[in-house]
Image (cartoon, rainbow, N blue to C red; front, side, top):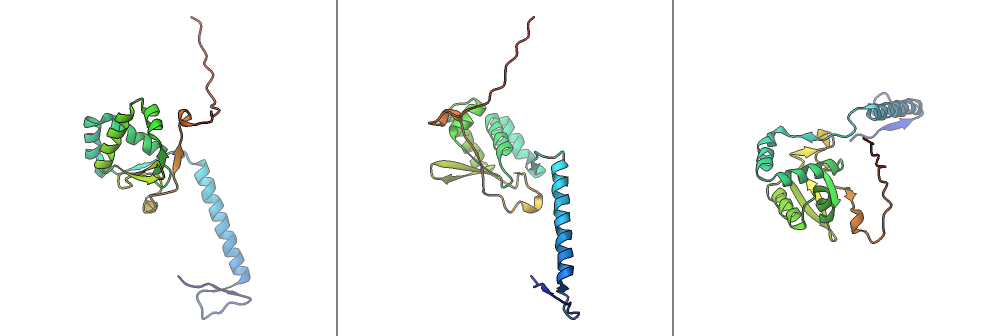
Length: 176
């Protein structure tokens, strides 16, 4: 890393020297570039996406054939993970989303862990699920090395002491 020297005048013998006015223009150009990048991202049709490494197709096909519920669980975790490949949710959330028993949750999480699709870390009494970033990731490929934390936290209303207000969709029935 080189040090930038900013002053009233430019030192022509120092490649890292610039005037205050040049530095101001440089910072303005960076600001404009950043705003344009944010606008491109905002206008992008790729708002929710993840990347998948095709080198793991055989393992995922095996998972689909032998442990379909585990694959569904993996898809749920991938769908919910943040840009750092992590998500926190309880067994109750997994039970409700996948409509399976607690023992089935435990068994299928163990399959995913044993086969290397996820790692299960502890945060107090909560589980933090990190998805193997050699298989799936949501961030750009050059950011895969940052595959942990912070995490999206998924809560089930049925686990809470306080009732959460949940907006339900209005049901419409058609007369025959």
